Length: 260
Image 1: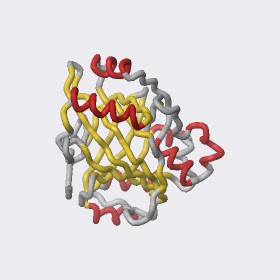
Image 2 (image 1 turned 135 degrees about the horizontal axis):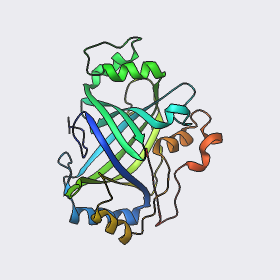
Image 3 (image 1 turned 45 degrees about the horizontal axis):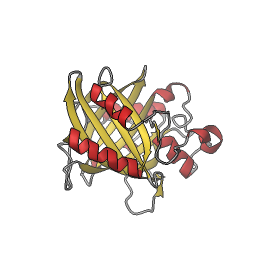
Image 4 (image 1 turned 180 degrees about the horizontal axis):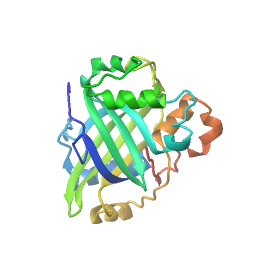
C-alpha cells in the first residue's frame, strides 16, 4: 500500500467534535469483537487484506523538553500534536487533536513525507500546507519524543445520528524518536503484548448499536493512554514518578478505556 487517505468518520481537514470510547481487551475477546464487527459493520474503504479492513499506523508524538504533554501541565493537557503515517505511504498527516467537554476535534494537513524536514527550520513558511502545524509546535516548544506503531482493523457504518466507526489496534509498540523522521529499523518496545485496543467513535448520543454491543460484551470504560503507556515503557521524562498508576493494565477478559 503506497498511499492512502486519512481514515475517519469525517474526511475533511477540520474534524468536527465527535465522541470516542476506547478499551483495552484480551486477545480472545478481541477476536470475538472482530467477528461481530465484520458481521455488523462495513469495511473501511481504505483498508486492505482478506477482509479489506486492515492497515498499519505509525505516529510520532510531540512534547516539550519538560514533557508537559505527558504530565498534562496546564493547557498542554487539552491537546496533542502528532505526525501520522498510514501503511507505507509517501504522505503523512500533521495533526492536532483537542479535547473539550469530553468531545474530540482534530485538524489535519497532508504533506509529502520528504517535507517533514521543513519542521526543523526556526521559522514557519507561509503558504505551505504545514504552516499552521509548524507555527504551533514552534510556539509551544514541541519536538518528536516517541514513535508508536500498530496494526488496525477498521469497520464503519451509518446510524440515525451519523457515521460510526469501530477499530481494533493490535501489536502496539513504541520507541524513542530521533527527529522528524519515522524509524522502521530499530527494535520497538511492545506495549500491548496479548492486549488489543478497541475504539468506538460516533457523534451525538451513543448509538443503539454500540449500546447493545457494549452490553453484550460487558465492556466497562476507564481512563488510560497509549502515549502515557509509551512514556512509562521508554522512561520518558519523569513518567514513572508522575503517572505510573495510569499506565495500561487489565485483567484478562476484562476491558479498560484508553483515551489519546
